[in-house]
Length: 510
Image 1 (cartoon, one colour):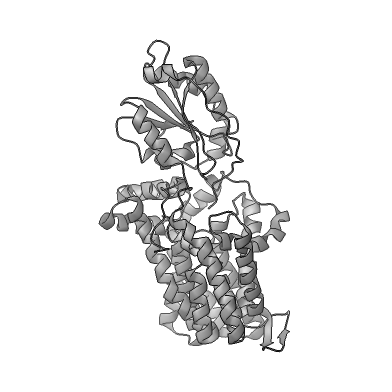
Image 2 (image 1 turned 45 degrees about the vertical axis):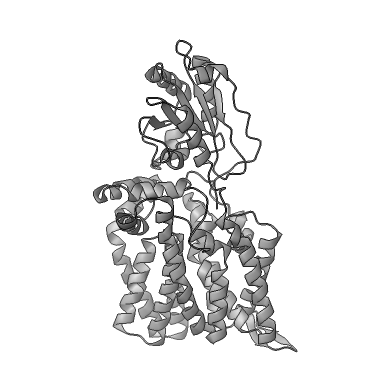
């Protein structure tokens, strides 16, 4: 149940995924080119929608399938690393993980990433134990599909291949070099997508977020807190769970001997935990450095590429504990995880879109104009509105179902909200203009406020239909303007502007 349902409506990223996957197949490639995402998950979702439709629960069920499939896979991986104790610990820790639960109920690629990383681990481990062409092909296929699922997988793949080549150089193990070669061979699957990837590097990126600073390196230790908290705030429960997992990870990477009476640590690390810890740390550092250099975002959901490796490392640590110690530690971790994951079942705070759409359905009439400022509010709300409304986004005037991320910052910074408002008012004529807006989005600084001011100057005091509610991560005001010549009674009788949003707002970061 934890991995199959959440109450919240689709938020921005999910709505974009569904919009792209609902297109005719020949149009998906161009939509992805303007979206900035690799193609594998949207294409799988496209096929899924042909059978199950594009309803909210239907599209999220695909991620639930991936999330549930990852459970037996991580148990097999845990057994290979630390025997039966490792299998049970890894299965339990992933089953109750708030991070894993959350992304198993979101129509995005992150639960697929977790599954592919675990399958890739098993394929690579199998090849290193018993090299063979079939196992090598499996390594290549999983490396290529992982790269086609999320670009941060390139950081993980580079780190693992680099570690294998370094060990070949230091220890002379030819199997390591061959394994790295199979991983590189998997890059041939990525070659058809390479032109789009290079286009994304130059023209899309993550303009909705400030790039990280190299001074953020010490903050990498906070990543386990995000894994422990899932989409919620990092409260005391999440911090406690993160500390338990970090302690297990430290034990997994450094413990030599552990008993009821004493334990011995080797700070140089011990296999297999040492290798897992190096891969996790090196991947995150590489991601931070490249994100800083290229101006990309560093957000918790992207770290799904190393999250399952961290769970395996914690499971190795748990397996090294004496049974009488291991059992209560895992019980504590399980209870904390469940307590933090269960609220996802009733969580409706991802987006205010259903509230905004319900108000518009009640008040707006066919032919009215609905404008979204910024355009990032469009995908989640527009899919819930009926046909007959003219919907567009500021500043380009395009359809609101998707966001065009190509040269996004330059386009927004060069826009003129005053001229847009004047043209909009002229085009709308005697129809009501409804503006769905929020002032807290990067690259839109001041634009949406100016748009409100200019429309008020042109059309008079607006009706505040809905005010932004700080309960929601993705939220907005809805204002309506009639004309002086043709006032609609509902608007003319209740003119009142929305109060400023007093709750600090940033990028939605579940």
